[in-house]
Image (tube, rainbow, N blue to C red; front, top):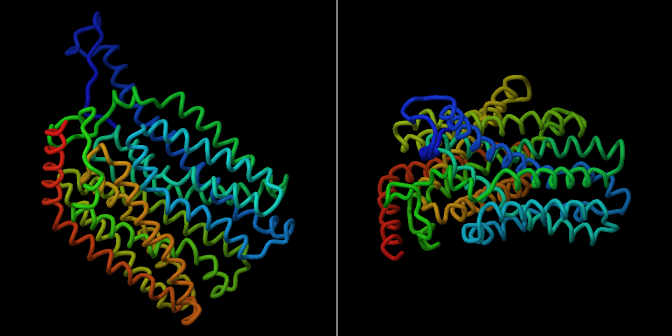
Length: 451
């Protein structure tokens, strides 16, 4: 499943390559293992990314008590990270495509880890805000550049699975960061919560730097230039404008961002939902909500695997899978929020949560298949911006505004309707997909001619 499409010549003096032997088997094993090592280390750093970002939520009560902070000040410590991610993802992804993905990822991880260490020694609100600003700068483009690096060493037939798993890492890392950070804060102090995340990040980046290199990645590279029908030639680059001139890519951006709307609402508002409508104390409501967060993350992985299976012989079928996941979540969540509290509502809510972000892997795979390798980090960075602007930022805020007028349940009943827009964008994208592939071939041919 993780085999790449390139081959490595047998060294002189080895057995006949047509006769499998110990040397050949060893080479094949190495070629199977290394891409998964790249994925594992990149994914581990992604977990560190979100653990460093979300550990703050676990220490809110301690900061409020120690520094007498208001709720708006506490919220600003979270918002500053999201703001930096929204503003810097695209330019930093573009820079990574030019400067080198490995060097960029190493620098990002060092920045957010050191900034998290600064959080541990901050003496007041202003210093903490400055440290959190740097955390956001470091984390801004890690998701887009990291998944671009991972996809470069795996065949397209597993891109949806890997993309879904990578994006789900945010959910898993958030749960671990909040849980572990809370335990450390209670038994040691809130400062050690930040310090532990910082040390973990620095250790992981040291291992990553030792194992993952541009030279080794080049040996396993599977990124295909559609004009040359082989690995993208060095030095051949397409203009950044090609990211926005392909209608099918725009549909993937819109569909991906809009399908994240309701998933973001569930991430933000399920603790309050269980607190207000099930009468659970805040701590118990948070525990129950974490189960649904894990369902969202697990669904992203499983839906990616389903999509790769469905689209193995027909890549265009990945669009249909993305549509199907949106339809299932629309029906399940629409039904859940229309029911009274109880087991049937929880079952439908669980089904809806599982599929709520299931289209994330397929849309990332579509963006990767429709953009040239030389700008792929930038393309996935644009998708990240769409996910943040249309989903992660807009969803919780808009539902909060509606809740002030309709009540939380009334607002949640409207949230799944955004899937209708996502479905429309994905259906249009499926129709435009063949033309999008032809346009990509033309862009690659023009770039090759200029080189």
